[in-house]
Length: 70
Image (cartoon, rainbow, N blue to C red; front, side, top):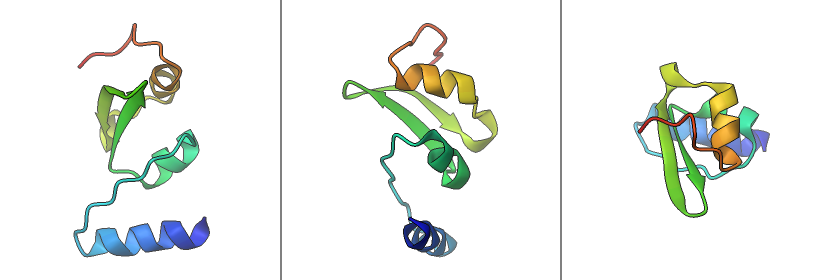
């Protein structure tokens, strides 16, 4: 995992876009510039780095879209 994170950071330094699919919220928050939450094949919400809300992200990951604003 550490090796992959290092590679992602290297790619980002060169301006490359990286799509990471993970169910690990801590992982997503630690290395992402933007997060899109998918649930049952649909994007529920997108967050920029300065908008991350851990609780809302977790709820959206579990299918609760009541607090989502698109």
